[in-house]
Image 1: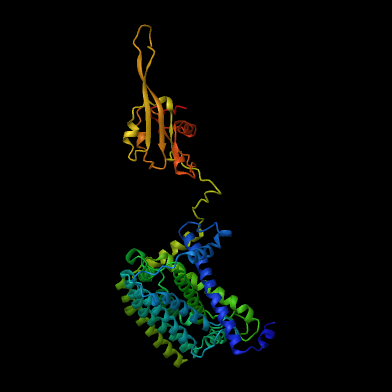
Image 2: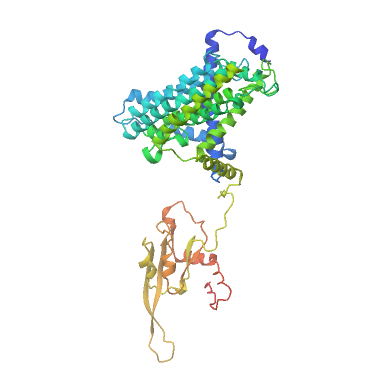
Length: 345
Length: 162
């Protein structure tokens, strides 16, 4: 059936429209899934409570109800806000999430865009959200917003570096920047001649994986690194003045980006859409691939949210110190060792 | 990295808690039994009240309203003088103000006020939370007996006047 589907020839604009619709509808869906499964249910059970139980079976519709509530709310602009920038900021944040989803492959032929510079593109567009956050912080005309925006900018730039450097090890080993190529490289690799599991790079690049997860945690401003939105220090950071659907956009952006980064981590380190034991070119993976990728995404997000619900917040100076004196040296060392081993073997 | 063992331990705590059953009771669907000494609602034994006003005066929220009048009861013995007694006309507790501190129960010298663990008396109208003395008297039926003192105590357990 997939081959019949793939045989259909569509014009460029038709293909693009379909892709845009799929990605745009998937972003809120991914935010809903992560928000429900982890933010509501997992956090509740880790705190020995049940979480939402009334809206739908086990409260599955709670976030939908919340979303409807947010849309009904009044769209408030602060008096002194820069209206244009204030209104655009949440869109910029969601745009960065949208662009992240574009490059993640979900099957051998199932991808929105297979760029040669895939991972480079992903890391580049993930930084666009910093601009949105800074815009929100500046345009709100609120000192807490401004402090939150500046904290976010400082943090995201500091952790961008270990994020990129952690990926370099994978790129050296795979020999390609394309995410599709990295998946194939893992599928075709072997561990000491034993090739059933391929060679998921988490085994050889475990240091890179750890650094990547920590940096992702900071990129997403999840709890040990949530100074930009620290409610006990600066109320809610750059989100203070946002209400209604604009706040909803920030929420979707946060959780959609979490999903996208989990998908990138799964692709880089866990073998992406490839299921062990299958031929990476087989057509069946176009159907199973998304499910396999989804399962791996849930595993990675479980770790992200597990850390989020366990650890207390860093101090601002500890955060910067941790990035510059621990993570970056470790990832540089990782690159050096990977490079040496790549040449040696 | 001396912090790492602590971090891992913390992760273990949250993971273990996640697999333990939650302590939440789904209240409207299943009812939790409160402990016998829980401060649910204050019950009034009307016959014991002498309208001394101590409870109303001690109440930090001023949520107890008492009205009474004096009357002369017939003498106990033939030829005696009539006795002056207090009659209780009104005894209201406004549960929309009450903060459940229990000072009124503590201060009552004649054992007229008691704690009952009942808690299901919410109302749609705020004014309906004003319980009059008939309503407060009904709560008497729900007051549990005092718990036994520890073994060897000479003191007898007080009885709840029902």
